[in-house]
Length: 490
Image (cartoon, rainbow, N blue to C red; front, side):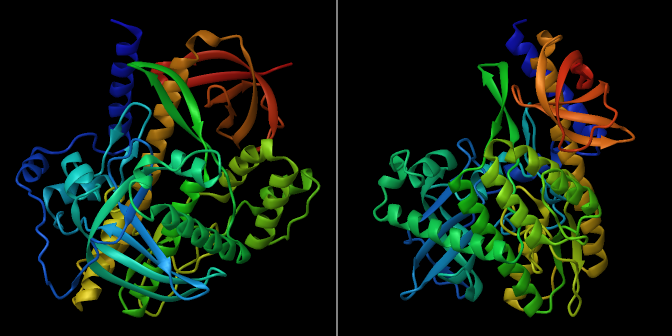
């Protein structure tokens, strides 16, 4: 058996086992498969009272190079001298996936797609997520449209949500669009083939920049963390490379954050319970402040987003090469986000990282179950009908979605460890520059850059804390267990 075949087979087997160990389903049930086989494309009814026909607009999508589950498309146009009308269309997944159906049961069990170095475990069968419920180019699709009027200083002056028929005119990719926006590449051919799409993208970028600037004024954090992307040569795993942010990726993130805020406020205005995405004020703020002091900076005693973001901005300017390491340390100390139910007349905690009081997940219903839940709540509110979930059900779902999202993240990390251990099998004895990513009574972990991998310091870890830079020697790997062990050099 070739090394390539061994790599793929072993990673698949280990990934499947990691899914099961964390209570996630690696495969769809027979009932779900039968359901998918029986489905057909949704027929768009011309002249339906609650569906606007927006198929003529020059919509486009921007996603990863290899993405096939397209959740959103965007369009923008001037709205007077100093404002822009922005439309974000989200795939109407609920129109095909009925609550309590076998496919819905699988999505409710896993709550998210899981992206591992071995394979992708989609939340919905690919017949749906990459076809029937995907906003694929040149296909008529139903969508939920979030409309916003954005002023030049990033303020949302008017917002609305409605159902519409849409048609994606160009499927674009982050890297090529970013290169063009940053002036180091040509306009992607697919964008060039649609009249006026170049000015469209410039306008969307301008809106995204203004939205981001306003969020940062209110204390939203500007962080930069690098996720490792598996690189194969045929069937052979050859590298784990960081997949850095770029201007196009940030463009989409900024527009989606705005749309998620619109959905949260819409449900509040209609007195509908909602599933909010929150990030509590960090309990380990003292360690963030200590990290700042070691860099000659002073943060307030109590958590303060504006002060933290100002500190981050100064560090990015002073030492851009190490800003990713600092970001990683801060992200680890901030803790994880979670889902919480907001009932009418009540308020849950804000999202500390985004400085957002009203925020829900609603823009990726092909990939996240909370977004599908929110879509169903929004559609019920639009029709003036009771939502499909009661308060107790939503509370249970909030806990379950938080738990499964954490489990999915652990599976992704575990499979990255398997892949990294495989790559490093022949590198025992090599020395690496590393950053400490975790320090607790359970152990001290570090990340190296080439390949991008995380392992445990088993010798010489005393006195190390998150964010410290250290030289380490690789002393042991165990692919089957995902173990990468280091000793502190010297």
